[in-house]
Length: 243
Ligand code: F6R
Image 1 (cartoon, helix red, strand yellow):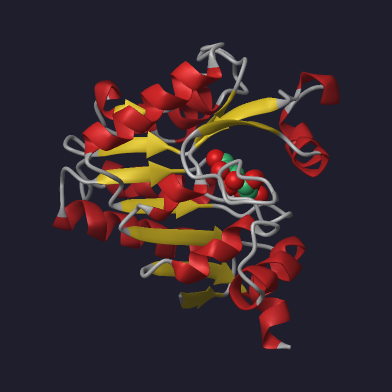
Image 2 (cartoon, helix red, strand yellow):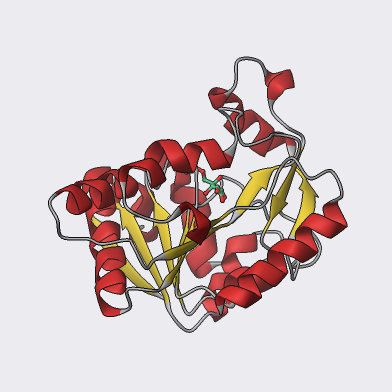
C-alpha cells in the first residue's frame, strides 16, 4: 500500500483527480470504478474543472459504480444514479451508455446482481477504482461480516451505516435498508485502487485498515493484499498512524 498524505480535503481531492486524469490520458477508453458519498465530491468537482478547461476528454471513458440503494429508482434524488448525474456525469462529455450503476429499481436481487457482474465482465474489468471508507471499515456497502463477500450482492445495511447516511434523507425511516454492491472479490479485481479518506472521524478506522489484521470485520483491511493500492488521506485522517 502506498500512502499519500495531503494537508487537507481539497489537496486530497486534487491529488485524486490528477491520478484519474493521468489514467484517462494514458488509456482514453479506460474503465473507472466510481464511488458516491461525501468523500469523492471534491475529486469530481476537480475533474469537472479540468474538463471545462479542455484538459480532459471523457468521450471514450467507461464507468462502473460500486453500489446503489435497493428500492430507489433513478429519478429519486437520493439514488446514487442521481448523485452521479448531479456531481459528475451531466458536467462532462461521458456518454450515458458508457456509465453503469446497479439498478435499484430491480426487485429481484439475484437477477440484478448477476446482471451487474456480467456487465463488469463485458467491460473487461475496472482499470482504476475509487473507494471511500465507512466508519465501520466498509467499502462499497460491504459491511463487517464473518466472511468477505465475493461478487455483487444485495446487502442489509448496518445500523451505523443507516445512521451515517441519514444526513442525506429527510427522516431516518426514508434511508433504504438494503443496497446492491460490488463484492469484495469484485473490488479486488480492479487493476489499481485509490482509497480516499478525509477527516479525524476516520482516523481510528484508517489505522485499523492499514496496520490491523486482515479481517472481514474490517472489510477494507483486505486492501492490504491488493498489489496496487494508493491511500490518499489528509493529515486529520492519518493522525492515528503518526502515533
Ligand atoms: C458509496 C460507498 C461507501 C462510501 C462510504 C464513505 O458509493 O461506496 O462505501 O464510500 O460510506 O462515505 P462518505 O464518503 O460519505 O464518508
